[in-house]
Amino acid sequence: MATPVLKRATRRELHSPRTAAAATVLVVVAIAAVYAGVEMVLHLLRLDPLLVTPGAALDGAAALPDIEAKPAVIAAAVVVAIAGLVLIWLALTPGRRPRHRLDMPPHSVVVDNAVIASSSAEHIRRELDLPRGAVVVGVGHRSADVTVRPVPGQSVDREGLRAVLKGELARYGLPAGMSVRARVMRPDEENRER
Amino acid sequence: MNATNRGLNRTVLFLVGVALVAIGATTVAAQLWPAAADAWRATASNTMAWMRQADEATRIVEGTTLSWMAVALVALLLVVVAVVVVLIARLGGGRTSVLLREEAADGAQGAVTIRDDFASDAIRHSLAGHDEILASRVTAHRIRGTDMLHVSVTARQNTSPADAARTVTGLVDNLSVLTGREMPTLVSIHAGIRARLASETPRVN
Image (cartoon, rainbow over the protein chains, first blue to last red):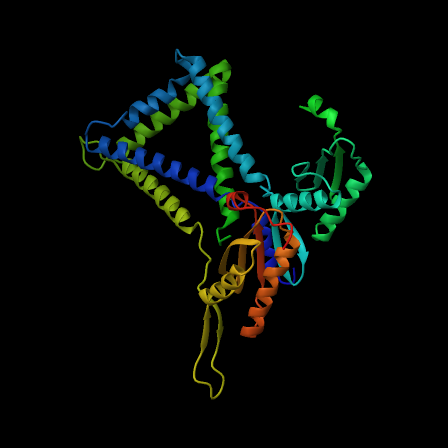
């Protein structure tokens, strides 16, 4: 993380740009504005409206409290308000992508969580001599968890398992502050868990 | 990764979101709460009266619907559309094709320009020899006047991200020795459909 450029680029890789949402909203706004403009021009030229004349639309909006179909109007308004809340939520939340930054100066390395998970699962599987598919690792922003399902007769120490995952994550250069949880499922437990 | 103005994206989302919440909330209030309904009716009739009056007062040709008021409204809508088109056009961008440029020194023949496809070809070609890297993409970016390189790779499943990162950064270091210039480099290692479909890293090499 030597240069401000890399710092900036890394931050941009770790967070969603919200471009898709913004582009969608902009396109909808543009369509609405174009439609309103077309209706106004048609009205000015005294041609028939596409759907409704501007005056009739305003009258309709003014009469909204006295409309018969109250539940329908309320439902539509609630949907609009919820869409607005979703947009505000998109605007204000950090929008972190499921990725981690590895410490590798002078370069900057960003890795998908899935890559970290599959690699550390394979490492644990070999370290503890477990069968294929017996190790499941999940990696989140601030935590990682591992679940192993040993074959009958094989014993796996939970603390040891935790230490193996912790060591592997540290080896990748992930922040040491990540919380690591381990779970060992006994073979007979499998049915109860599902 | 590109030069999209993310603050602008979020500002657009926030403003439109607040507008939608305001419309939805006032509509619901006007339906359920008599006082709000009265306020809605009063505001609506005042606005309509004002608009009618403005329409009459700014009439351009008597006896037609044409008025400066209507013209102004259409112009306002056109401005909205223009702003939106400009905003959409500004999404993306920031890629550059020139990776580095060496100005001619005294007595030299001329300027030397290294384009991004040179770096891209060099790195991709070297990565093709690495079995654990399934796909790679190299792009040059110009961020606030500084050039940087972005190497994006898809790693085979079960590949250690640390090893993959070391492989890529090693190649980038070789390239910077070759060009004689340190280039800030961002390496991103991805999982994805490509990685899931390819076979896993063999246990014995």
